[in-house]
Length: 470
Ligand code: ADP
Ligand code: MG
Ligand code: ZN
Image (cartoon, rainbow, N blue to C red; front, side, top):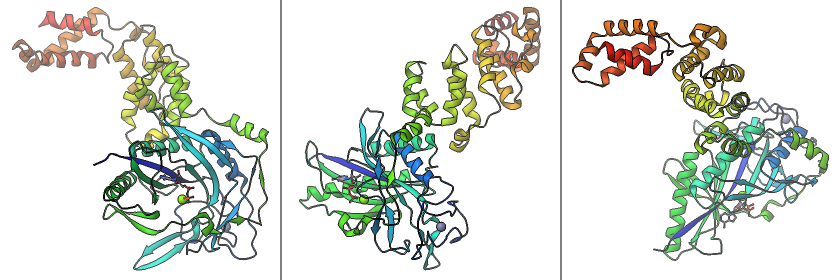
């Protein structure tokens, strides 16, 4: 059998988190009673006039800038005509030949750039709800602003497709234009996929798998589709260009409809909306207000701070974590200590993705930096650093309230000797085991000393004293 290569291009819909819909003042809030967030404009009654939401345009420009796109000084809205129950106007207001943004890219870890052909704005459709053997329609989502981000067919594997979407998600979250939750539908992917013999120049015929709403399904659907198309080519048949859906019950993709072409939609300019003009100064202003993006942070963390790529990737994954790290790292001599404490000790308390994302802790970058400074100047050891951080995380108390002057000197020898005696007296079993040749039992004894001194004891000194007592 010949070797085949997967080729994919993604069309990703991202719901913008504006307060109101794209052409009317209805709320975009998610999860309310069906058909309560609707008005004559967003349900498309004849004679109503849409008005473009400025914030939606601004968010789309932010998304474009954050993915290295050019912002087109002149853009316009068009009608895309089709009939489906979720679209009461029988057309969707979208952008056809003059999108807001074009020619960007997102770079993957392997260095490959996935080119972005365009980003345009459009309105979302309503939602069909299948219940009790009937189909209902909820228009609350109709008119919610979307951006559609279209890539060139640059993706060459399932892993690349997933990484692209994850990165896109991360960028959108950083700039705050969407909550990009796949399971809630605020990020949805159409995957265009074809195969070709390895080394071939020409692209194969593609199928488009609609509306992937989880990474797991996306991965399975792509795998299935890759095998299906490879089998077709191997047996001398042709792939049919069509739209398919992934059936989560069977784990297979199945035909949905033939492929429409642009001319099927009879695109024409939306006559009720004016041209969208964006002045270069406006673009500059928006650009200046963008936060530092994940790629830039990654480069700074690995190059300037010398963090490992793994650690840098963990920190940039959550914007608030990265910002906390940045603030603390500036105040200390060893940024790596900040990163270690976040990734090990602090993350131990934040187990879910949501908790890491929210990063709600009572310790501030300043107090963490103060604590680390004590360690850097040799005034406290690692154990005391860690146990104090635990207390800070529990109580929110400042360093000065937890470590006093006499702690800073560590534990004097007489006190330490006394504590060691106690530990030996209180742990006869461990003492016996150790004397019987079980080295591991010694750990329990050292642990006891550390606990009694809240980690302040010098471990070497404690070892010596304990051994002399045993
Ligand atoms: P349409 O608008 O009809 O869906 P486009 O030509 O705009 O079609 O392409 C849509 C998506 O399909 C783009 O993301 C593009 O990269 C991808 N694509 C186009 N041709 C192929 C192909 N042969 N194999 C895989 N993906 C493709
Ligand atoms: Mg398409
Ligand atoms: Zn409305």
